[in-house]
Image 1 (cartoon, rainbow, N blue to C red):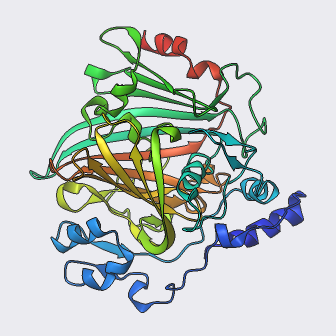
Image 2: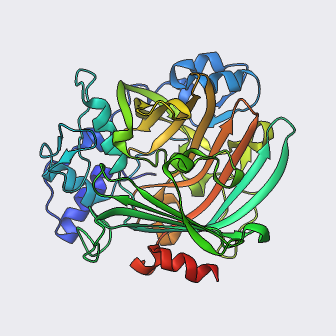
Length: 429
């Protein structure tokens, strides 16, 4: 049985000496008015025969996909997803101190926690506030994706075309909650917020291709990205326009990483309110993975199912979500908008619709998100939501890229040198 976050916080206060301000349970464990609806009982299935009964809780694009028989959903039990107690404490401690600046991308007074715990449709700044909440959502400060498998699939022909195996790591330099040093890393001359590193381990033709992204703390500063191609044996800076190209021939752009991997100032943000909807959030250890081969540590990736094996084969549960859209400021951007369902408790992006420049629906992004308390033993300290898988479905081309992730809290401190261009050259030799 899942332990509610508020109970975890009380235990931590009693035994670890953490002094909490107001715990803000309404933001981290929102009450669901439809929680007891019989249609949402664990084990229920949503199929083409009954999908209309679930329309109020499902994204409209997903309804059409299920109606065509391309995917079915199984419902799981409701879980209160944890959020790290230091993050919750900081949210309460610094509530009301963060302010939106007068110029695009300006944020003043942010220290730690969720910048804007309260969102309202009556607030004209609610969209940009939701964006900052996504940017500063809790994840551990140092994480590794020890295997990161990308599969390119022809959805129409139901054919697996290509498999890439990668390694990934993320280091948070500022506004840290889970790892010492807190609140920030001292050796940070470029004033970075985060750095992301990816390396391809196979196939051989692109082995040791590497990607490095530096995101500045100051959103008015352009993010920096570099790529190392083993065939060229050199590091190349990625131009801004290339961040919206298909990454390594997949259905995913660099800008799509982590829901949205770009500057907040480069988009106009609109808040459409909150509602209760079904999202693929679950307990990894309670999934039926009997047909999935375990790795050497006993971990089993989440499988994919449905048409072309393009959809996560996990259970879905009712969540409170915030509905947000953003529209590119630049007229030459390849998209007209992104539409997000953001989980209100964790501020993870739960489902995204992506529209092409002509305004037509182009892609559907679906992450599969596990409760950290029902994951690997090494992730007990995570205290949050862990993304186990992602699918990016090109609905126009009938193609998808599925990602299988085994992510963990870094067992040893990540080093600054691993997030430099010199490191790209070193690993590429």
